[in-house]
Amino acid sequence: MIREIAKLLSISLCSIAVIAGIAIASPTADIMISAAISLKNAFEEIGKLYESQNKGVKVAFNFGASGDLMTQIKGGAPVDVFASAALKDMDELDKEGFILKDSRINFVMNTVVLIVPMSSKIVLDSFDDLKKAEVKKIAVGNPKTVPVGRYADETFQYYKISDMIKDKLVFAENVRQVLDYVARGEVDAGVVYSTDAIVKQQDVRVIMTAPEASHKPVVYPIAVIKNVKNERAAKAFLSLVVSEEGRKILSKYGFKPVGQSK
Amino acid sequence: MDTLLFSLKLSVQVAAVATAFVVIAGLSAAYLLARRNFPGKEFLDILLTLPLVLPPTVTGYYLIVLFGRNGLLGRHLYAWTGWSIMFTWYAAVLASFVVALPLMVKTTRAALESVDEDLIRASYTLGHSELWTTMKVIFPLARKGILAGAVLSFARAMGEFGATLMVAGNIPGKTSTMPLAIYSAAASGDRSQAEIMVIIFTFISGIFLYAANKLTRRLL
Image (cartoon, rainbow over all chains, first blue to last red):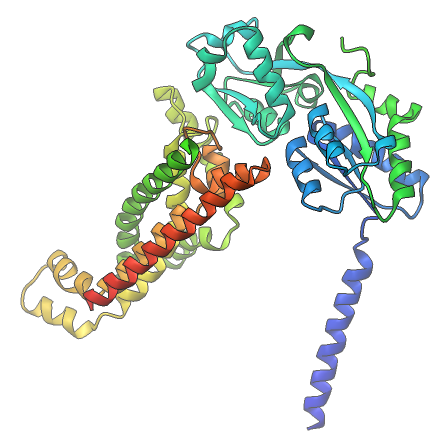
């Protein structure tokens, strides 16, 4: 009888110890940042800087296609700050009252580039060459949810090749997946931001940059979401992004200041 | 409406083709596992069961490693034919095949192992070959389990999402099966489109299950 009780007690104590250990060891984030996945490398560095300047506040990132992130926020996701790669997604949240209007600010710009796998033997000099028969598959972001997919669509229309390449398009769920498809050689070409091409510069080659006139300006807005628990910490993160230090980190990764896209 | 009809047609097409292959491969594998002993038998069993316990994204990743344009097998196919399975509906069939196969193998193996050994021995003593015995004695006696495996496989193939998304992509008009189309619609906030598809998919699955139940009862 005593033996049974002792066994039960020791098992319970061990389980409680394990659960407590896990609870203490895994810090819960204080603020959650949803950002366009093209901002991943820059924001992760800004996040570390933020945590070193604001001891005790933990930052968690949620990277993805701006459209997906916007839908999540509309669905009630516990996000404190949102940064998207296009005005459209932020405008929609703004219109429906999800963001703190006076926190909203455009903080960087980007350029759109055509890339091919480093090992590609196909001769491509411009977007126009995408209609060549040797180009069988072109990766672009899904225009419904990925801003760079829409910019690609606009550029294709500018070069009047949309109908000709329509059947070659492979839609990816976000810009980094487009980059991955090209880097792995699964497709013959892809359209990403210049900042993404830098990340995989060993595996992809930039053919050309889309002319400014071929697509809407690539402006990244950032804003604090309404009614968040840690508004002060969220606003502090936003301030860091737009500060001198934040801008330095962003331009290190290839992002351009607002009002200057080339 | 077009996306809906296309994705429905594609899902049924992919699931049907995948299930056909699954039944053939699954029956053969189950037979080997049920009625033969060979070195590496348990390893084969584990290998065939893995896609059942692995997350579909892990399965999808392995498929890319094997069949991607630069994959272990895919690069040779590409070198010979200039063709890659990635981003085609055949890739959707491949993904569905791999995830549904364990279901077929497990159910069929159990069904085959439950066939009365005396009846099999009786067939041999009457002079019938292994092939004849298999086709005329073992399979008919195990038909309920075999059919159950086929139905489960079809259902699993219809509902495949993770691995399919990775190898076939989600290309509207080409590889957008219904689970993928629903995902797209939901992700882009198109609630009404998503809802119609969800209802139709549930309804169709229900009908298949009903038909399968009826069939198994009648075969008894």
